[in-house]
Length: 245
Image 1: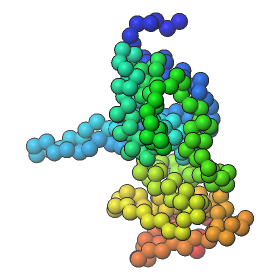
Image 2: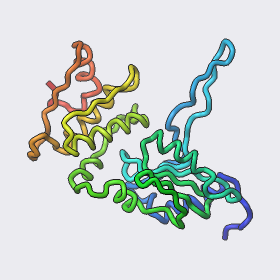
Image 3: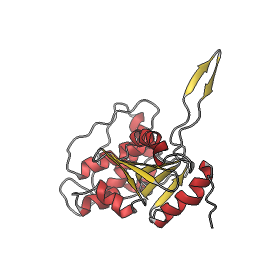
Image 4: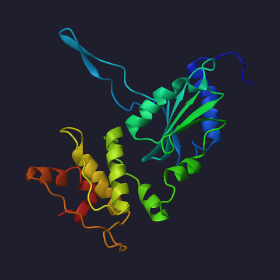
């Protein structure tokens, strides 16, 4: 039996919030809950002749419908605070991650902000994974939804950064929705080759092609210097095996 006295934030997360998330089905594979993941390292700020890094950005929980599809962010505060105390923080994370649902809770009550409707409301329980996924993709066909759930190729030495995941998912969704052109603008050193590979891999694995035939696509990879083609072909794109030319 849980003591009714005010508990701190860590206790509220462990005792109340995680129980509610588990009850809603977020810990049942392929769904999952990421606890305090680092989504971005802290900003580097000058300090005299030196520099220091600020604290990393890490939401309390990310709710993942699938390993490559994050659906919502949850911020938890101690029981003595209003349930909405962490909502602005949750919304800031949601906007950074391109998410449409942000939740704040004190362990007992839950406040939801829905970017699809612009509405804020208090709810008793967290929505289930299928409920949230249904709201996110209302009106889209089953083929598109299945394509969005096609997994990444998992490299042991590299996982997608938050902005890479956004770029990959949005591009794949645009292609599956019939858009003929998409422009991604990424700075030097942000992993453009990795993003390009994952887009190609997912389209290849789901057998997408412009004609709608049941076959793997043909993908033309262009660059303005030979090394920018040769190096990816011989390194990052190795998982494609003999289909590379």
